Image 1 (cartoon, rainbow, N blue to C red):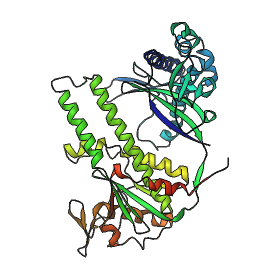
Image 2: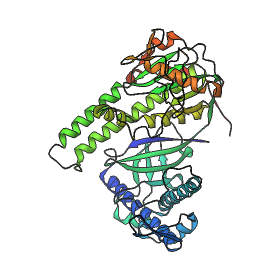
Image 3: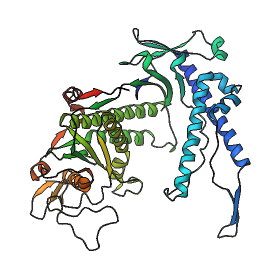
Image 4: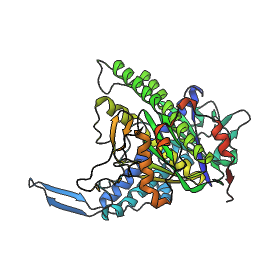
Length: 457
């Protein structure tokens, strides 16, 4: 069984009493999270062994030895059932918050073996407390009432709070394209001063019936050219990133001008509104671009996606103040993750590959494309960047620099995936088709979905 999420804005779409109650629940959930975590941390520090040493300045140091933290979800629910914050948001909602604490501790426990085996660069830290504020509240399907005919959903009110409210339940807008029996939970999530409802529901697993795993699509990401792609079928395209770049620039200019003469930490409702709008535009662009890539693969029967990526590439980037801002703020990592999620949901194999030297090596001259740190000493590439956006090969041919970088990604995984690069020639590297985000054809989705077949559970 697969799960999907629909996100619906509540602020401005529900009455003031319901909005105030849900905000209060989020505040109590935050306090409950910290209370449960406090109990776990105190037990850990009271019962762990410490190592001691003198540092380089002869100062005495003391630190707890790393060890697994034993947690029991059932025991925590029993211990906190009389907690004031637990009672405030209701039993089932409180249990969901406790479950999130347990998941955080289990994530820490999974990191410990990786640290001891030298697989992690940074030492794992015990989950820390949340800052004062709001945290999500989850309502399970067991105690909600869903009315899709009139497009509303009723959320329960905790017994301790029913006397304080006029209405017997909280009414929020419903989702679409799913049935009540498919709902797993509804999460109330605070974000940028607004409340959102996230409907998590079950969907049937599907798999594309037409995929050819001897073909692949490679993606080189950038700024102006957000996604530059080439396929082993001799086709190439670019998803234009200038709109995303423009949205970021307008947002940064407004914030800089609005906060002029104010402290760096200044924030108000106007800035929240502008940030909310910018985030919605980013999410929309990510979903459109990711869905287009998947539908392109389905329509052209491509079974592999190769994505060029360098870990922590944004941390030490130094391409100038303006370019740094554009590159760092564009949510390409979120786009990569979204493409991976959609690819795996329909049976497309997603491969992430180190993109080192892919922009420098000449694909048409059959240059070596080594991984980072593996370039032979004294090795020189045949071609070079001729000017912005163009790459000049040893024979003097001019090709699109980003598309030929994507072709080099295919070259890196050709043996691994068993793909043939014979059709990746000069023509497809020279004039790629350019798509605008606002103009991505919906016809691709209609043509692609015909190949999706349900999988029996």
